[in-house]
Image (cartoon, rainbow, N blue to C red):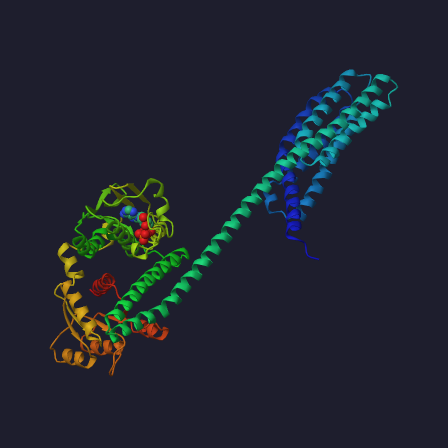
Length: 585
Ligand code: ADP
């Protein structure tokens, strides 16, 4: 038969209680022994005239047993004892205590002399004190108290009973009542000790239960997040195909009303893509599958990039946009911090119909606080905590996806929690909001500080020759226009053969290549990249693909090619290109 878990814990608790009570006796033992020693000295002095040799024998046997008990008392080892060892130890201790009681009792009987009132009084006084002392110190194990007190008092009570003076008989009777009463006290004291130990263990058990429950809940939460992460990842694959087919359908349709329907579908798809991306990010952060990689870096590098990215929107919306330079080196994960600042800037622009958006700093000895301020609609005081919750939006009751998904700040909160950076918000409705993030300062010499000119040389696309290859003319044109607007000098081809010929014949020497993976003709994008690298070793290449199948992703990974999946957002494309260039240089 199996014991139920609660039955097992009952036994465990009982063992723990017994062990703890034995420990209490052990802790009290030095004081008990000292009490025995001190109690015996005045008694021995008073009895000295009685019979010196026998007194010496009595004292020697008492001190011997006290010494043995001192040796037997091993408090430090008790922690390693098993319940069985505790039981055996307890029995040994009981035997020694009983022996001590007997030695005292023998003295009380042998030296009880009714003709010498001094001796009688001294014995009575000493024994009552011994009993009082041991009542307190032994009551965590009441049977030990009985084993000590009964043999201590018993012989003396007997000695009083056998006297033919009625006063002694009554005294014996009184002593029996007294002894019985102390047994009662001992039980009461034991109950109090027992309750307090029990309470302590129950509290410890409760804390342990709570800890295990919290652990279980955290694990379940992580499991849910892992499920969500893989579900949103798997959902993105068919969605990618839907994106592509919608694009294909779009090129085939000519009727304006059909084009309008496709445009509506594409808007819906964009929202769905964004929602899945955001859900994927939230669940990955919750499942702790994102590992931050903190390093020292110049925060201005990120801000310069973001300034360029948001400048056009600021211009189009007629907003003043200003980013201060801090010159600070911070210690954090640059990619995650860029994500946080981007989300906060997206919000600042989204919720600011007029006025300005700015980024500024306050610096202390160990950290720098980055403030993202806007003069927008502001946030009501009672929503300031709520806005960091998933899907909370102050005023989007109709849940129009064009007004955001309500996940931007949830991602910000999670990333900052992961990085351990505090965030604060202050806002006045109608006047604007400020989000402030505190970043620890890094060590300047840990990262190579690029001078402004080097920075531009490394990261800017200005003047860079870029080869664009895609089988669709429209995409080649769009990509070239975009790269041009960033200052690059792109040349586009719709076929790999022509592009290769141009490079072979040195008509065009690219410094970077953006290549579609699925190309008609002899080579796919990866093979074409190989051919290009035979002509220009180490040419940085970015493969653009709508194909997310495992083997394609794996083979691109094996060839150490950087990949960007369609649909491509311009800001993301730029970030990728800049990152590949800085890495290469
Ligand atoms: P959303 O996609 O709706 O912007 P967020 O999680 O980024 O989702 O923000 C949650 C809500 O917080 C927003 O819907 C908006 O009501 C409020 N909010 C966030 N940033 C600002 C801001 N700079 N100014 C005013 N309101 C803001």
